[in-house]
Image (cartoon, helix red, strand yellow):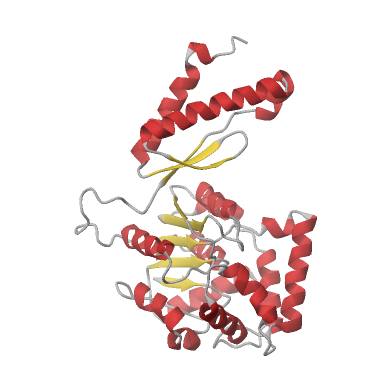
Length: 348
């Protein structure tokens, strides 16, 4: 299994630090775990200028070729997800599994709105002004977003990891390269079995980005985690759920699992009122809202009957999770039948 995380890595510091060492020990217990520092970070040469996605893919290819690894599982963390996706599309025969955690196809939350662009420029300014200084206040701005639930010691360790991982110039160049990365058009070409994992309260990469990845990759499974930490902590429950899910996904522990043991993987169901905007214009706000309330009642009754859990309301639809695909399908059929009943029809 190859971990891909081009930013915030330092092979030596991670190995010597108890917080990060626990991840290494856990992930390497059953697999050969390959870690590498991305270009311009950690122990890699810092005198580089090209931080593009293409350069990151070439680096990954060089690492795997040097180790003579013909077929691997790729574990793409955050911005490393784009590199993993690109490599999996380019070399499908070399990728057995694809795991994307806290990843995104593009940084739409930074580039699609004026407010997002201002936040991006603020982040760049903080990096350039104080990333490499002995004062942790600049870096702690990022740490508080990456792991809002961390204790003082974990915060100190992450602040230090940020400092040793990259120079201010390289950190800013990496962030700029991420802003220009877009793998949206590659998603439909992924052929490897894919597990997409995302924390519901992630303050760095919005939860919607994880949903977008899962929806765009054929056959991808989506695992939402109850955590606010983009950089997850070793002792939080979500980390244990992730470890179990990864083991199951990679084919481990199937023979010893109890027959009735619940899976950490879930099936996601989305409902949507088709043409809701035109419907509102035709019926008016009051009747349209009444129709939405009826839809919500139907869906929630079906969720209760089929063992589903509502994740969020989207305005004209509902996102729900199920412990199995069969229950999700049963629920979808129940919703369709309820909507199709004569008493539900407008006669219009």
